[in-house]
Amino acid sequence: MSEWTRPRHLPEALEILAAAPGPYRVISGGTDLMVESHLAPERRPESWLDISGLQELQGLQITEEGIRIGAATSLEAIRRHAEVVAHWPMLAASAAVTGAPPIQNRATLGGNVCNASPAADNAPALLAYGARLEIAHHRGSRWLPYGDFHQGYRKTALQAGELLSAFWIPYPPKHSRGYFRKVGTRAAQAIAKVSIAALIEEDSDGMIQSARFGMASVAATPCTLPSVSQYLLGRALRDIADAQVRQRVGQDIAPIQDIRSTTEYRLEIASRLVLEAIHRRSESKKED
Amino acid sequence: MPTTMRINGKAFQSSSAPNARLLDVLRNECDLKGTKEGCGEGECGACAVLVNGKLVNSCLVPLGQMEQAEITTVEGLPEDSALARAFVQCGATQCGICTPGMMLAATALLMEHANPTLEEIRWGLSGNLCRCTGYGRIYAAIAQAAGGSADV
Image (cartoon, rainbow over all chains, first blue to last red; front, side):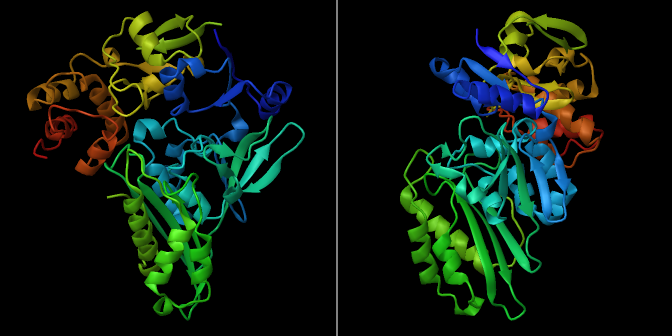
């Protein structure tokens, strides 16, 4: 019988992880891990560390700079949170298209990124908003830009003994606009073929001051589009050459063919979505 | 260490492993066979139950998190209710596999929206698959149970 530990406080959980960092599997909502555990019992861990009871990892708090979201906060709590809906609508929208209500009632934001799927639904919004991660260890916490978290296919920057404890998301710049879209085969539950979040800031003359993109299902990890962002910087919308954007999208992503889509489709859709994000002035949009 | 919960209002203690699925505890230990296993990976909602009033897929819930939880399965819903009558009257059931999960999803929805719009009904049931009815009659049943028009 496997061992199951459900500590009440973060220091206790960190002590446990520090004392035996290797064999523990960290679980909270379980919406990914329970599937894996059932389908591949041979890979079932000996020891589970259940962090769903840690108060420190729960809830959302508005701060001067933005919002702190505990890593074990449910996607349901995030999508319903009035401040998230008002200031970070792309995150509210991505939480609302992660699975369906019974999944969102259990799944957590921390779990979605730690599971480290290239298709992680909330990764694009977190990348576009420039989220930072608070990573706890019993010797102390460290900060990491979320953009540095995914280091390879299903490989994260978490070291032995570390636990993702919270997300810190700054307020978007005043004159910025967001664009979010998830493309999948059905409205609920689908795993994304491609998804995108973009945050574009323009000055009063219509020059782009900053442009940050987050995409999923277009590379081995959720990713930003550094060369697209660089191209847009300081340009007015009317001076943007779509062919240049397309070429840079091709440099920034590395889509694969899999059961959900083809390389060509993903590349084409990614380019069209990036162009739509640039040229369209709508707010975040739910999936079709 | 055994896990103590309340299932359909009655205290129940399970000695299964903490990583056991709530679905298996309900079906095999409690003999509550109304909760179905469809996909086993959270896509279909056939195993949906309420845990502390929230709709969840019991195939994804580890027993170890159920200490002191209040669990409602389809057997815990009233035998005769506006919802049950509406399901019958609207022909919202065909093969029946999805029906328990649909009833729980509808219950969770009606707890939050006493008079849901069609959009709210579709959202509330979006985690539940039905391969027979085409959903229209299920949506109609929920609208009727809420006292609205069955004409959706």
